[in-house]
Length: 212
Image 1 (spheres, rainbow, N blue to C red):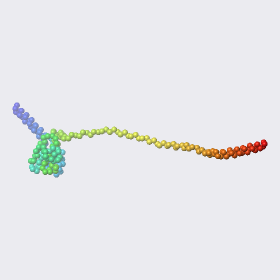
Image 2: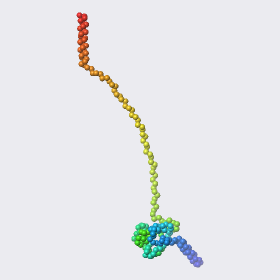
Image 3: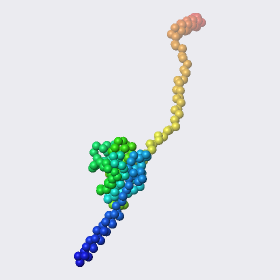
C-alpha cells in the first residue's frame, strides 16, 4: 500500500513538472543580436518583442559580456527618460543573465552604461497572466464620443415682394380762368350823369318851347 502511494505521488509531481515546463518559454532577447547597442536603434528590440507572447513564468535571456553591458528594470516614466535614479530591484552587471517574468503587466528593461539606453538598448514587453490572455492594460480606455443631435435648420421665410403700384397721377384742379372785370370807375359815372342831365334839361327846354 505504501509503495502504491509513493508511486502516485511521483506521478503527480512528474505531471506538474511536465505542465510547468510546457507552459514556460525561454526568450533570448534580440536572438542572434543579443543584448547590445543595436544599429537600428530602439526599433530593433521593439520589432523583436512584437512577434512574441510573454506569459508569467517565462524567462528572458540577456546575452551580454560582463562590464560591457548590464540590465536594469525601470518604471515607464524612467524608461522613456532613460533615468536610472530609481530602478526596480538591483542592476544586473554579470552576463549572460536570466530573468523570470513573475508578474503580469508591462515590464521595461534598459542598459545603464554610458549612452546605451538613449542609443536604443532598451526593451518594453507586455506579460499576460496565462497563455492566450491579453496583458492588463495600463491605461483606461477613453469614453465613447458623445454625439449631439442637431435639430434641422428651419429655412427663414422669404418676404414676398409686391410689385410697385403706380401712383395715380394727380389731377390738376386748376381754377377756371376768370375774366377780370375792370373796376367800376366812379369818376366815369359822374361824367355820364352830368352829360345825361344836361341833355335832359335841353330836351325839357325844347319841349316847353313848343308849348309856349
